[in-house]
Image 1 (cartoon, rainbow, N blue to C red):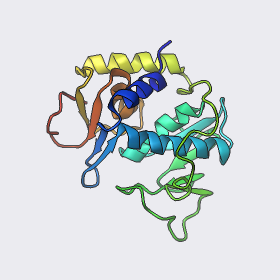
Image 2 (cartoon, rainbow, N blue to C red):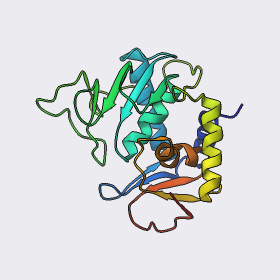
Image 3 (tube, rainbow, N blue to C red):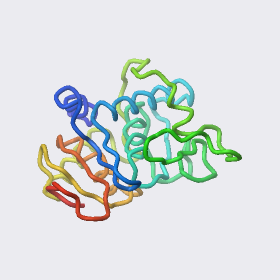
Amino acid sequence: MTTLRQTRSEALRLHSGAPLITDCTQGRVELSHATFDNWVNKTVNFLQMEADVTPGTTVALRLPLHWMTAVWWVSVWEAGADASFDAAGADLVVATDAPCDMLVVADALGMAPAPTGASAQWFFPADVRAMPDQRVLPPGDLGGLPDMSAGTLYTAAIEYAESVGLLPGGRLNTSLRPDDLAGVLAAIAAPLAIGASVVYSGAEAEGATANA
């Protein structure tokens, strides 16, 4: 069974320095496959070693279209947990506003300190930046969504890429908020599944081969 972790690993091996995400939501920031992998490794280490996330855990993600959001979706899956759009019943809530367990400060370069006076148990990126750059625990089963396995998620990502005309090596332009399945497929799952890159932009993106 093919998964997003396998296609991500293959893209990292073949094109580590090539852009995976071009985020134009706060100026312009490019994340290569290698840089994205570094942030995912740190975040997975945090989830497993500090937040006690294990297979069967549900993590709610209430986040905007931003490269940090893509990091969180992939990190939750690779930690073996299920990512949810709904905070109700979730074991861990990650959001840009309270109430939440992990408060995300979505700055462009990932250098924001913990905000003064904010109420949350942890802050991203401040509490994750110092985590190890390499995965500490061996990889286990891949998570998905509460009603969608990792294998089904990969299939949905491939089908979505086909529906918008995204081909291997292509570049998807999206302005969809990742607060439903289509938004998450566009923001990160479909580009990873098909071997493409993605631009977060509300305007026409230079070099885009597909739009969502």
